[in-house]
Structure formats: structure tokens, C-alpha cells
Length: 177
DNA sequence: GCTGAGATTCTT
DNA sequence: AGAATCTCAGCA
Image 1 (tube, rainbow, N blue to C red):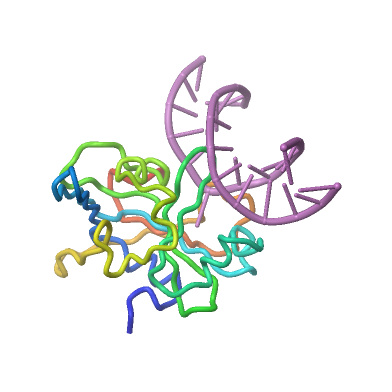
Image 2 (image 1 turned 90 degrees about the horizontal axis):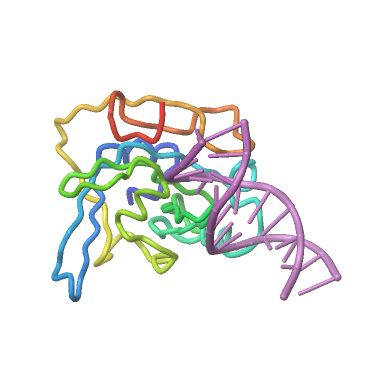
């Protein structure tokens, strides 16, 4: 079973502790930025009042694409990166909200900050994160045990009566308590 | 084309 | 607590 082809809540939890890699090809000579994913949120289909799948248009269409599709969403002058989950035709996605830099030093404790640090913009929209030469997810140490904290989602006007934000307990790089 | 809301961030 | 600032959907 493909990792992203599952319920977004499961994917959001399982992404915690994994490594996101951003590789710069061309003149940057293969330089790689690596960071641990420490905070995520799950978004569902049109029944989710906070989901962009509620509205028709490109964002909804992208959420209907195959699992692993990158969805870039612009809000308040920031780019946010999401990864589409579940099978084609089902609108859902996971938002990456915060990462812990491993080999660089730039603030990444917020969805708009991490895209800025990793130089992720709309050009990644609709690419797939599987088999991508510029961005991908790697597994981390299996023995590294992680405690997950749940909370309600941040910044949404209307949330579901369910905790859909997940972050690594005691991690210093989450966007907020 | 214009309008208004928004999964944000920074400053006071 | 409020401003700054851009993208997108909806409507004309």
C-alpha cells in the first residue's frame, strides 16, 4: 500500500519524525536541505468546513488527484505545502506546518516559514512528491520513539469537532503550543 | 476586472 | 491586538 493512499489523519500522524529533503539541482550543485517533520494537520473533503475542497476550482481538483500529489496553497502572502492523500477522486490532504532543520539554520516553525526556507513555491503545485528530483520524504530512525500530541487545527475559521493537528511532544520547532 | 476572505507572519 | 500583503473563487 502506498503511504499517502490512506486517510489523511493517519498520514498526518505517520509523517511526524520523517525527513523532508529539498535538493537544489543546476547551479546549486546538488545541495540538499534536510529537516524533520514535527507538525502536521489533516484536511478532508467538502464536509470539512476548513477544507479548500469545499470550493470548486483548481485547489479542489488538485485534492482529487492521486495520493502523493503536491498541493501548494497561497494565503496571506505565504505558500503552504500539502500532500494529497487517499485514492484518486477523494478530496483530502495533509498540511506540513513545521519542520526541524537538520543541516541549515533558518526559521521553519510555521507553514509559511518552512516553504520560504526550503524555497518551495507554486511551481511545485501538482507535481508528485514520489519520484521527485527536487523534493521527497525519507524515513527516519525506526527506533526513535515519538510521542504525538493532538490539538485542534490552527488558524481555521471553522474547525471540525475533532483534533486534526499533530505534533511531536516537547519539540522546540513547532509553530505554537 | 473587481471584491472579499483567508490553512500567516511580524510588530506593538 | 492590528497591520501588511498576495492568491483565489465568484461574480459581472
